[in-house]
Image (cartoon, rainbow, N blue to C red; front, top):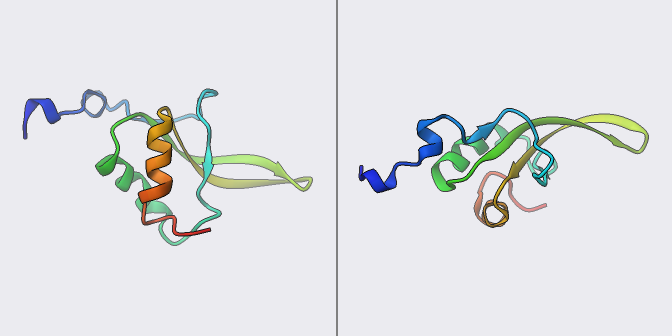
Amino acid sequence: MDIDSINPLNVLEARRLNFLAPHLDPIVVSDYSWSHLNEIPTWIEKNLKGRYFYGSITKLVDNRIISCKVVAFEDQYESSMFLLKCPHIGQK
């Protein structure tokens, strides 16, 4: 492994956020597939480099409170790459 290929965010264990920061735009992944939801963070760690959030949030839909899994990225490029290339979300 080359020193240039080491991601400082990985070394500091600062890539995966434990809260949905207000500047992140969440993508609801539970709408796509429930079968591969646990594999999404692994795919993100292997294929992307920036900070992200992956977890559950609650939201109001049709006057009901529901819980859903979301992923959100700081970098809009990484959001696009995730939606285009992640095999675990499939087509909606």
